[in-house]
Length: 65
Image 1 (cartoon, rainbow, N blue to C red):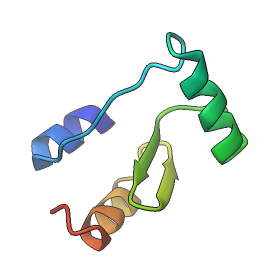
Image 2 (cartoon, helix red, strand yellow; image 1 turned 90 degrees about the vertical axis):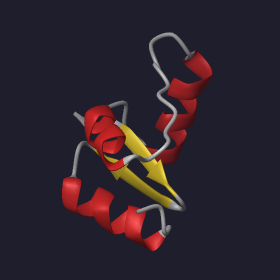
Image 3 (cartoon, helix red, strand yellow; image 1 turned 30 degrees about the vertical axis):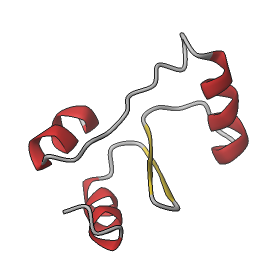
């Protein structure tokens, strides 16, 4: 859902599969203390899960939409 939403908004993003990229999984665990996905980083904000209002707020703050 997050990928579709960001694509619909025309926002460039990079998808990382933490099952295939162990270093990325470790990074997420260090950053959030959790292993849940999705984890969305926008600017200096980290959003756990598909939280559309927080995503919209972070995108606006980063001037990406």
